[in-house]
Length: 348
Image 1 (cartoon, helix red, strand yellow):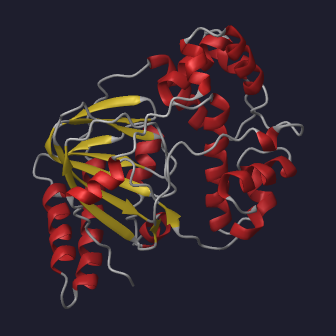
Image 2 (tube, one colour):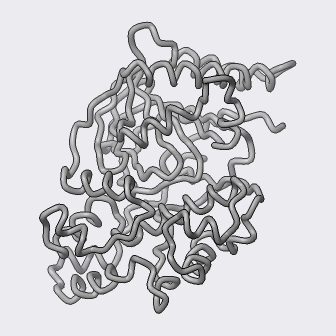
């Protein structure tokens, strides 16, 4: 097994990783800001197809909102970083779990539309598929550790009634993503102990790191079960409600008309606010969530046809085209086959 490594980038490395601005202003956003009504109408017509019609469903999948760099080949990987980066990062998601713990400084984090102000010791649970982004003001220094976790490896550690992936499931089901390391919990020192073991290496380091990782995940779950959560500090309440509804009804037939009526908002206004807040269209958000769900189902042994139905697709050909466009391979290629999990250094 390849030992997970702690990365301490040099100034040159940080420059290479972060010199590129991640402020991605699309033509759609420019048109909205300029008050281009034609763009709004075209966007509305585009949204009407997000249920996956046979005519254009396979060709309307939006690209990923972030750059992909490297692969998560290990069961987990730990990063320890400190800087004063202040670029705007778009919402994005991963195909693996992630925990971010703030060690020092000042930073915020947004998950599924809700924004949090972090204090040292707070940790963020970002489950596979949850859209998120860091929120850091220009010049604000912050030190953090970031742990990337392969979901199937985490599930394999289940023993008795202890499923260490429960914390991510709870975070996604309750929409509560940030927790505080307090009242005697050991999350922060366990992070630091794991980092030190990986840094020092030596005899038995790989085995010890696995044991420390397991201990850390047990402690994280205890904190989550204890309810030491941090409340959200802000966010567009209407968009947050819409995001939560979409996640709860991800595989059901949904239309723009139904959503607008349910949330008492005009179609145009709803779509514009959703995109401005998340960086996604409603169609793009649902498509990526459904395809990621299908990918998980395939990894667990479902046939492509079963995965399509369970992910909310009524037409297999539409699903197959969308899947191949998103992941670069057909659903059948992923059936019962493990792939390296792509990771991005964008929000380190």
